[in-house]
Structures are given as C-alpha cells and as structure tokens.
Amino acid sequence: PVKGGKKIIFDLGISGTKIQSVNTEASIEVFNPKGGKKNYYSKKCEIRNGSGSYSINIAKNDPKGSWKIRLTEVISNIQKEVSITVY
Image (tube, rainbow, N blue to C red; front, side, top):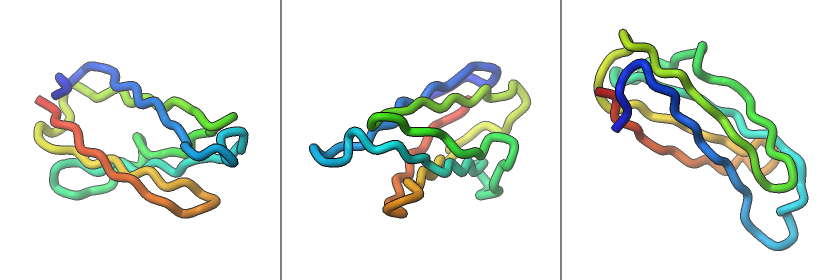
C-alpha cells in the first residue's frame, strides 16, 4: 500500500542470458481505480543493459483504491501488469 503524497519507485529488468545487454524501452501506462488512463503518470522508460527505473509521485488528492500499472517492452511487445493500493 502507498499513501497519497508519496513517491513510488519501480525497478525494471529484462531477464535472459542473450538479452541482458539490449537497450530498449518500456511503455508505461497508469490507470486509476475507475480504469481511467492517467496520461500525466504514463510515459516511456529507457532500459539500458537490461535494467531501468520509473517513479510516480502519487498526489495526496489522487483517488484511493487499486491502481493498475501496465508495462510493455516495445521490441517484444511483452506486457506485465502490477497493481498498487493507494490509501
């Protein structure tokens, strides 16, 4: 759980022996508890040598509840979704 007004940091990584040195990027989309995409939190993130980092500063007045974050690696189009609870 994350309190409104706090920063969340995500460490991104690519696994696999032949692709860890690949430079790519991930498209990150953030959705509020009602399913609305929040463009001001969504962006592209560089992944260099298999790793990257992304952060969100959750506003104190952001809606409470379960937020969804969808990451898509742009070369393979592989997606991963995670949820965070904002209180």
